[in-house]
Amino acid sequence: QIQAIDPSIIITLGRFSMTRFMPGAKISAVHGQMKRIGDRYVIAMFHPAAALHQASLKPAIIADFSRLPQMLEQARKGLGRTSPDEPAAGPVQDDTKQLSMF
Image 1 (cartoon, rainbow, N blue to C red):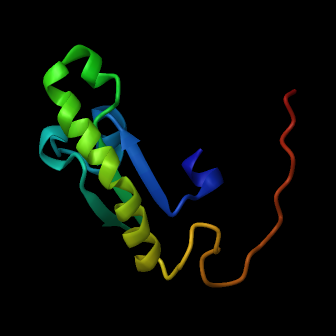
Image 2 (cartoon, rainbow, N blue to C red):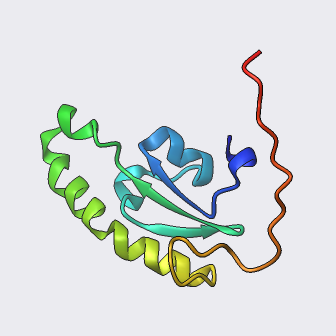
């Protein structure tokens, strides 16, 4: 899916998706942080459901999500974009094809 969509910014929700981009990192140490990995930005976040299992995580989750708009803006600037709707610099290839369900 990542290869097909090729997003510039990825927000991981939880430890399992985070380890795809930050192997060996602990979610408790890197949650709410943004890292440039290759030509994309990755923001590690606790999964929101974690607050249901560990109520002590709720303030950290709320704080991380409240800082998300600023981190997205910072990532867009790092990618040379000024707004969410502005495409990345360079030519856009529109060779997409509708996938079949069957």
